[in-house]
Image 1 (tube, protein in one colour):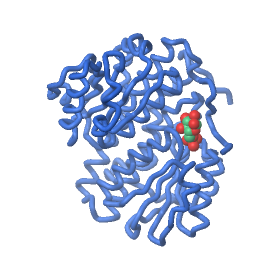
Image 2 (image 1 turned 180 degrees about the horizontal axis):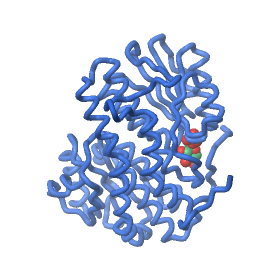
Image 3 (image 1 turned 90 degrees about the vertical axis):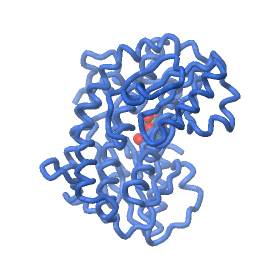
Length: 368
Ligand code: G6P
């Protein structure tokens, strides 16, 4: 089987554009749209009800998907989540208890640190689940329960479609857990499932922001440092945005929880440091706006990525605003991933780097 770039200049662009389709494939595996329910029955029945804690571990982009899922599991299923990057998790001798379950997330299913974390949890006698994109991989083979992402083969070193498909599986699992644990009613579950069903269409509409996002590439390419800010589920997305940008454009970027700005990064702000603020119109929107005001007051250039409601409500001055379609808060991280990916991609293309094979990076890290 040969995989080509089709009409795209890079695999990364092709993979970004495949997202409406592959997220749809992934969701159709875990949602029953005739009943507006989640479905995790085909050989992978899972019981979240008796759990005291969910342990999540992964590396890189998969770790950020896990961090978004922490917010979802805690909010919708009232299930405490302990999450760490696998390279720390595997050595930190975390006490494992009977009521724990562990969940590992990996595109390749071969990342050495993630695999070692999985083996540690198995050795402690708890059930181990995995969200993986390569079904025949080692992690998929060794996990007790496997929840595949149906992203298809991902070739670009910087992960895009695997990330949003991981989020689709994790969101479905969080709803499932919420119902099993009695914190999400059947009606609430139906509403959450309906919002998930909207994702492929909304992601498709978010792709139409491409030309607008591309226009930011030139000014961004002149920056030496870029700061990404977000709160709640937008905080992991801020870190993912910074990771994408540094991986492929080699511009130094940091993702920060917006509320931590005043505890350090604010010292860096001047007119040369673009600040990308990821802020859907959610519970913490106003808090993030006040952080934007702090940036603007110091001459910082804010690129606000928000939705229509957020654009209408935002009183703070921005340098540029990218407006994503309005979506329910639950699915915002999946939809907001699109402009974040496109921004990194077009900045790298503008700078002429090797987008699909960035220097010093490997698609799958099978050594420690
Ligand atoms: C490498 C890749 C990243 C990926 C990470 C984890 O660093 O370049 O894109 O997120 O490994 O890989 P995994 O296959 O476990 O998701």
